[in-house]
Length: 252
Ligand code: ADP
Ligand code: MG
Image (tube, rainbow, N blue to C red):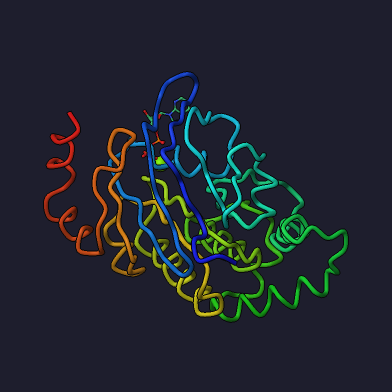
């Protein structure tokens, strides 16, 4: 695996014919955690979706490279197999499908194998659930049926752990997450990285609180479809104190 895991080069993205991203550059090296911050509507989720190849987001210009391969025109499933991970924030609840069955399907796809015994999946899952201090009964729950915010997050972290991504994109949507749910994500990322120190992480958030738990190497501020500033973790503290206003003025 090369040192440079993900390279986003001068990416321009449209959603439904409207330009949203207007030239975004972002590179993630092995073992780095990047935080992408910005106000509502800045284009953070658009960037995560475009990197994953969501068909609703059209790459007008620029390139996306994963481990030196240009994946710009690859469909989402090929990107996932190559090791890009974007948690589905709100996957449909599928009645009758348990957490373990869902994870098994995802693992089959990522590993590109036809067979993976239920026992094998169960063993790996149980190991991870123990590391993450999760109740083993969670594996048998029906996917997303009556999940709390924290349980959705646990499911997301489990997926990340079992899929062994090269780069994990975590889009922490802007509403309805309490601090306990954020801690689940932060602790999960830390635990997975203890085992897989080379994994790259891009965590999308506008909660400075999350960054106190996760300690990013780099912080980027996205406003109106452009990264207007990048810096170290101290940038998050500036945002906490002053908000985004200083940069908003700079954009206009
Ligand atoms: P953020 O995640 O930073 O809050 P988004 O990427 O969700 O921002 O949205 C950025 C802008 O793009 C918003 O103005 C939003 O309305 C628009 N947008 C996002 N997704 C779509 C879409 N699928 N179709 C049309 N407009 C979209
Ligand atoms: Mg968003």
